[in-house]
Image 1: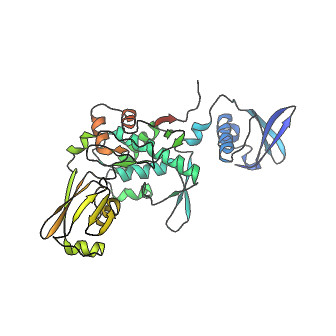
Image 2 (image 1 turned 135 degrees about the vertical axis):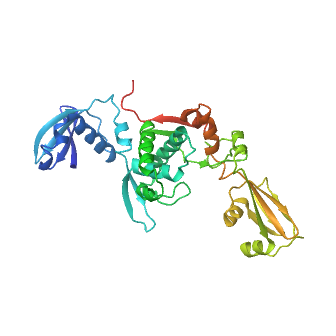
Image 3 (image 1 turned 180 degrees about the vertical axis):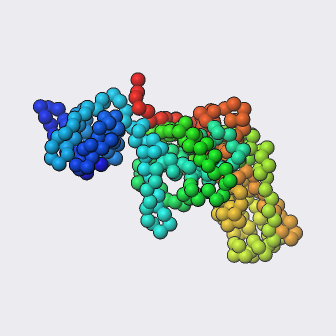
Length: 342
C-alpha cells in the first residue's frame, strides 16, 4: 500500500509522511481510519521507522489528502504480531523462501502434533511455544528452516488427505490459535526455544546451554504405555553399525554420569548412540547377553521442557495452559502483546 515514507519537523513537532499510489485514495482501507491506522502502524514496525511523533500525513501523487493522529499510549504491537498479520519466511530445502502467515504455520504445527487424546489446554501450550519460536527466529534470522529439530514444516492443507475430520480439526485449531493469540515466553527478556518431548523417566532434564530449562518431577510419565522400550541387537549388527569388533566377552558399560557408552576401547556419546540406533530417548540402559545385547530406553524424546504426557495429565485434572507452562518452565515468564496497557 505504502511505497515510501519521509519525516519532517514542523514547528518542533515530528511528522511522518506516508506515500500511496492514486489507486488507494478511495479504497476501503483509506476511508476507514481504524484500518488505515493499523496498516500504518504495521508499516512503521516492519520498516523499523524511528518515529516518535503523533501526526501522520497521507500523500497521494504529491498531495496531502488526509491526516491522522496516533495515540502514543496505545500499543500497536498486538495487531502486528497477531496470527493473520504476522508474516513468516519459510526457507525450503532448495533454499528458496516462501511467505506465510503465523496462522498457517501454527496450523501445520498443530497437525504435526495432533493426537485425539490431547486436551485443548495442551494444544494451547504448543501454540504459545511456537508463537515464541516464530518471533525468535524471525527476529534473529528473518526466516525459519522448513526442517529443524523443532519443526518439520508441511503446508497444513496437505493433511487434508490424512485426516477424515480435517475440516473439524481446522475449526478447532483456529479457535485454539485465537485463544492464545500474541502470547509468548521469555527468559531474561529473550525468547526461548520450544523444547517439547512426549514423556520422560519421571523428571525433566536441564542443559547448561539453555538456563531456562529446569529439572522438575513428572511422575505421570512413568505410567505411559510408551514409557519403556526394549530393542535387541546382535553383536554382528552392532559391529556393522558402529564399525567396531565386540562380542559377549567385551566390556560394555555406561560412564560419565550416563553420557558416554563404552564398548571395549570404543567410546561414543549417548546422543550419538541414540541417533545411530534411532532410539526413543537418551535415558539408556544396556543388558549384555551371550548372543545379543538389549538396549532399554525410558521415555520418548530428550526430556527437555514440556512433557506432552505430563501436560495431558495436568490438563485432565483441571490445569490450564498457564498451570502447565508454569510447571514445566518455572524460570520463564509468559507475556502477551496487547492493544492497550492500563
